[in-house]
Image (cartoon, rainbow, N blue to C red; front, side, top):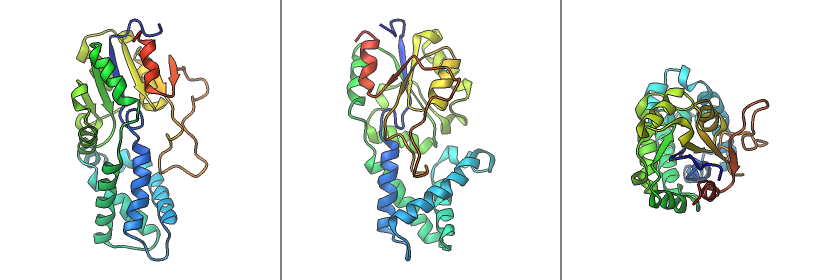
Length: 254
């Protein structure tokens, strides 16, 4: 039994427990279908959105937008839409807001738990495992996601980047999580989809790690030939790589 000493389990949220990227991709397409841009197809507009995001998102923390982003997703979401329209020669504040609002609404409507998530959370709660949630993103969006998915009651604490003012992979995030349950690092398991943000910092903190990898784990901002994240050369491996959350149960002896 690989995780026989584990006494608490922490989960990432997006694309670990729920299909955030799938919801985002569907929402983008539907948004540009509901608000067609003259002279451009839906596919072309989603590509323009992705290209704008790769520039805007890369500099977010250094650009002066980060403080607003932590509080609420609306300002940066609308700026992203403004930059998308700018790429096709359109400056229209009303359309920008309509695109941002529509995208946010549909993304939330399309957000669903992975089929394996609820079963695993129920088993862990039944067996008395304390569970926590560690998620990056704006305070309002991440809270809304947890409410939409109906999973808030499973977790204590819920550590959100936007509420703390910093997020994974900063070591303080994992120190706060560990302190919440008064456990040793090796007694705590991190389950997440991002090697960079979830797995590597947990390894460095002395935690046990389960890296969940799904073929759908490609963001809408990725280029057409993008593939799911791979283990960087020379980097420490997680304790286990999984494809389904249920795979952690026998490793815990459940």
